[in-house]
Length: 121
Image (tube, rainbow, N blue to C red; front, side, top):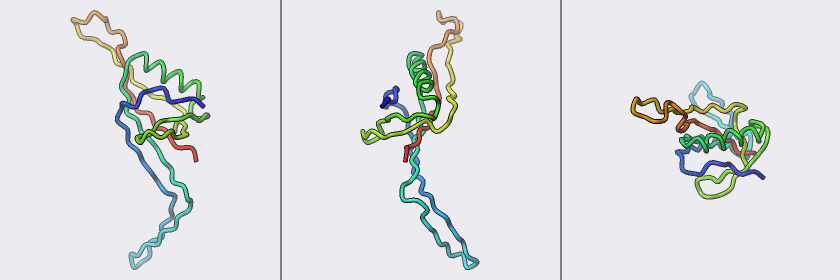
C-alpha cells in the first residue's frame, strides 16, 4: 500500500467525531443515542515545503485518483493508519520570490496548503 509522501513535520489537527443522534425535550433534558461504534477520524495537515515536496504531493494525489484510493499515513503516535484524501480536489498555493534584489526573478520557491485525510473505516 502506498505511503503518504510528506514527512511528519507540519502542524496537524486531529478530529474525532462519533455518529450520534440527540433528542432535546421541552424540559431541556437531552437523550443521546450512539448510531455507530467506530468514530470518524480526520487529520488536517497544514503543509509548507519546497517545490520538490509540492511535486511529490501533487503526483501522489494524482496516483491516488484524488480520494478514490487508500494509503497509509503515520499518525501523531507513530502508528500507520489506513486513510484517503477527504476531498477529490487538492488546493495548494505556490510561493514565489518577487523581491527586487532576488536573483530568482519570481520563480516558485515553495508552497503552502492544507490537506485533510480521513481514516478508512
